[in-house]
Image (cartoon, rainbow, N blue to C red):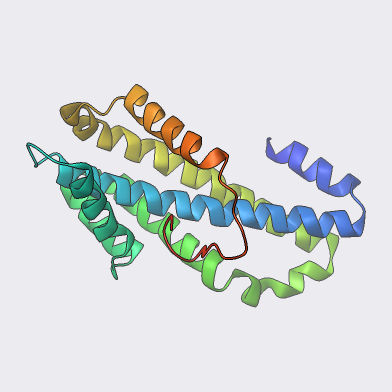
Length: 189
């Protein structure tokens, strides 16, 4: 959806639906924030795996867990990525700017902009902010994919391999019954 159609949908909605759309766009912003974080973890883990000649599923899990449960911040990961993958100065600056925005959206956006929710033009501004961020994340993510492709190729991780892995995960989870006892704070418990 382009911004114009997003705004048209918002303007045509009743107030209750407008609030739901606003929250949906904020949710998308948070989703893309996590996408950026996961891409960073993937890059670091795959680079580390590329240095191992024979590895097991347990070793792969161990390396990913090291990053998934790390106390390091996304900003720290980005500095490692910038050095390890030889990011251009321009891409480092954009990555740092997007991470700064990500931190703003996740920690303080609503605290600093709650007054915008009291007017239609304020809500539209918020949706524009969310949409602009999503576009920037998609752009830097596409660049990070290009940087990581050389390690993926060295390691034989093609788009088909990734797709097969995702298909397997989907197949494993699609029929699982998730009850109230499922702890969604833990990783794939």
